[in-house]
Image (cartoon, rainbow over all chains, first blue to last red):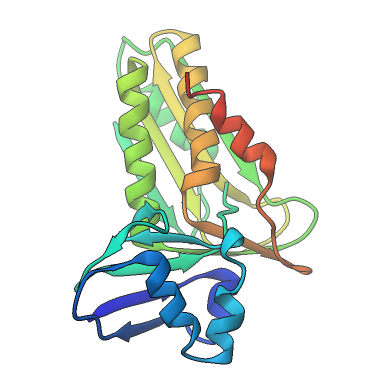
Length: 83
Length: 140
């Protein structure tokens, strides 16, 4: 199982901010996002523009080739705009 | 004194600066930067655990680059009215160059690393390329 967190317009398009997903074996972040995009039209809309999507694994910034393992917390969000 | 605060409530610039100023006789310079809401009210979304982790890592990096004696970083979240403070970066050092440079470094990286997202009346604010450029000047 992994925990997924969504923020800003990613959360709004998906319709909620958090969910859990069964994960048996490690997977590349890109492949995980492909799998998520197939879950609902909202997921597809939120995850379509990969160039504007950023990710973190266990609260650290992660690239698409990073590996997600069972038990991880994965966050998907737009480029940050704080400060 | 090295502190990171992620909070909904406001902060007071003067009292935070005074805490750094009072750190001891070695402090010869205190630099403060405060960002505030302009033009229209904002809502700030954030990822609490990552925000703390990223900012604390930036403070650690700043300490390895400059001999700073203290740093306070405060970032707010939630609904903020025009004129309200959003972010504070304050540093203390013996000399002004270290205080100025470490504060600018922290602020530049905070803009591109700390997971906060602003939403205004027209929707979510877009990230700006100039923020990435500001970061690149520290990478030599």
